[in-house]
Length: 606
Image (cartoon, one colour):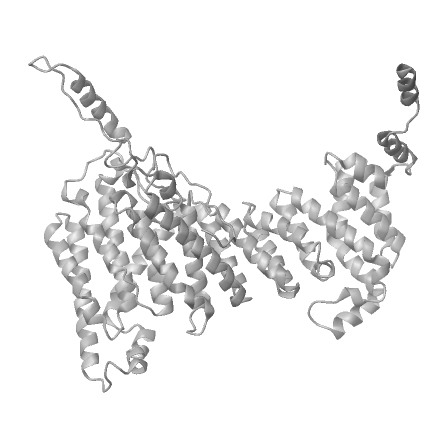
């Protein structure tokens, strides 16, 4: 009996699948889209013709879903359109992305004349939902927008991305009418903005996001700021000069977006600077490899640099809310620079020092940068003669974060490190050169430089340090002479802050002329690196000074271990004490540029 029932069920299409198949077969027959059909649509749409526009939008929906897994079940069979060739498909897409946005405006306005009158009467973003024929074409507009966003999410070619983004940018008035579509568009735009698809698509995607943020309801701006930062944090890893340019472009976009609402920018900056501080606190407390990797990577450094640029651009006024975040950001930078005082991580310290110097110069505040630079000259490795290597690659300090133990002992790295430290010290001194307290602030710097001149055996370093010392002493004398003739006291802060203001603008001090020459030499080196594409010292197999050996030292270490296992003259084997397996601060980064994903969120927890 059960078998008879099963046979009856098989012959009776009562299941959902059978019903859906029947409905599809009952759908209207498929229409082949040909070149002649597309040209006919173009001719009929020279005038207002809503049925033809509906056919074009429906065919575009079919084309936007072409190639999807569910394209035949949802797009093609529902609409009844198929494409005879790739040429016809391209012809339809070119027509849609070139003209449909203007055709929609004409049909919603009621013709070319009505559209021209409305655009002439009102400037800015048009409120298309108030136009007379909006309700009649609302469904068509929504369908076209959704399918355009879907098509954008599938593209990878920069030229096609640029064409689609240009039309979506022109269709912002339609987007603002559909608040539920804006998050979908934002997601697609963020993907284009953070992907490696070229400069023009990136800038156009950002321009579209910025225009939407300026006119969309308030939550959209917060979502945009959050999406931009999280996309930046996920993609700001440096490998070469090309990625450096991309990171600089993305950070510039974020800084510009923060200018739209500094109060909203403060809320996000507070949360994410606090997260950076939490990562640093974990590294200070836990002292294990995982905690250190959360801090010593390019993502962390670039996030610090981003918020420093935001503060430099929008926190110059004393009343700015963003200026309240200056002190915690400086504390985070100083903490990262001092986390592992090792010669191998001197490049990372220089990255932090550049951030601190930028904050000090742009916001006219004093940041104690000099002690971080002077510590560089006290590394223990500098007391030993550097290792000579037959082939030493040139070092690009702009994209360098750390080096191996073997590279840290080489002459080229040590000389380049001290030259970088002297240049950054000169940059720091130049930011303070016109302060009324400059003679007192330079006393420890002069003492350290004179000690360096006596200790170092490198002639070129001696000459550079002596020249920097002489220029600082000249600036001290110049500032002292100007300070001796003032009529106000130390309690008059307004006059003290205005001290040598005109000379600062003109750069007429003796140290400014010296620093301009040094800056020109440094900029020439940067231009040369940009032309070459960047070559850095390989960060392979980075081991600690205490607990590991590099590739060059591995052979010697294995020989020592073999000799230790052999019996000595007395017939006893040499006993070598075993090292502790506990992690130490110098055991960080055992793999090349090992970058962990920063756990970014907006949760206000530890």
